[in-house]
Amino acid sequence: MSPLLTIPELAALFQVGESTVEKKVAAGTWPCTKIAGLVRFTPEHVAAIVAAGEKPAIHDGRLSVVQIRSRRRRSA
Image (cartoon, rainbow, N blue to C red; front, side, top):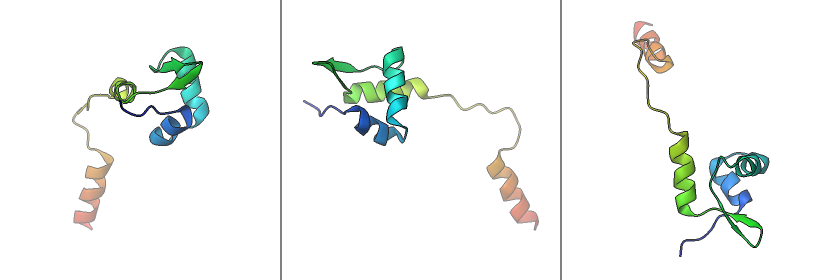
């Protein structure tokens, strides 16, 4: 069985505050498992949270900041 993460461990993994994790769990936004009243996260939960936050890249024809900086360096 894979190890289960605690709220502090998940918060550290995602580099967010523990209160953020607690709020997401309380709202039902992030999946979790409760064992004897303790919140735990499986690797599948972590993958689902990451997948839910993914956004497709949108290219609208405008230059990105990286492209603009790159052009400035070449012209200088």
